[in-house]
Structure formats: C-alpha cells, structure tokens
Image 1 (cartoon, rainbow, N blue to C red):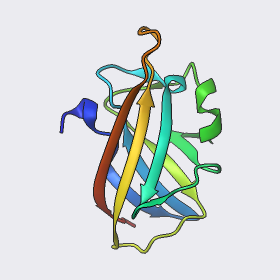
Image 2: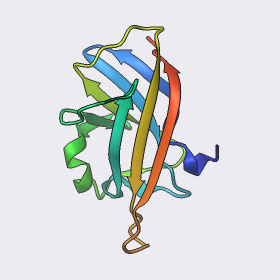
Image 3: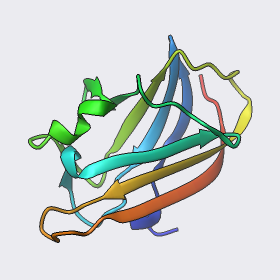
Image 4: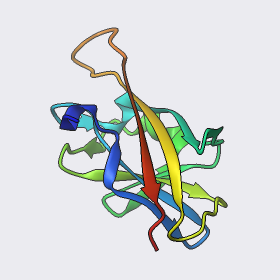
Length: 127
C-alpha cells in the first residue's frame, strides 16, 4: 500500500487509561492543515464506533474531533502520525480486531475535491 493510501498508522491500536488510541496517517503527498481532514467513519469488528466524544492527539496537543474543522493553523506533517482517542472504549490488550477507518481529505488548493481514503486492517491491541 502506498503511503498516500494508508490511513491506519504503524503504531496501530493501543489501550490507554480511560480508552483506546488509534494511530492515523495523512493520506496525501504533502502536509495539510487538520481543518481539511475529516474522520468519516470508524468501525471495530464490523460495529460502527460513535465518534461524538472522540479526540485528536497530535504533537502533544489534544482537541475534540468535532472542532477539527477549526484547526486551520495546525498542520499535519506527512511523516507524523496523529491519534484518534476513543474515551470510554475498552478492548483487551493482546486481542486482535478488524479496524476500518475512512478519512476524507479536501486540499485547500483543489476547490471542490473531497478524496475518500478507506483502509481496513487487523490490529492487535498494544499496552
């Protein structure tokens, strides 16, 4: 899979205090502001995950996923993973799960474009 086709990061799925942390990669060939990246959907083992209380974590900062469209000055660099934090979601460490993530990218320099980027992978929950 080419780097611009991947949306699930190498760090995978991690159990954290109070929830789960999923690594995400920017599926584009250059860095973009977070405001033009949308988490379209997430499912684990075929079950849709409610993202109402999800957070984004990047470069030591966290913000609500719902406010991601306002992050015009925070750039996601193509070599970095960002993380989707899922509070109050628990999976056993070491267990394997099918994770399907879809990100939409709307580069500001290509008016009207909304590229869909789905990926499904089997991930083992790390500690």
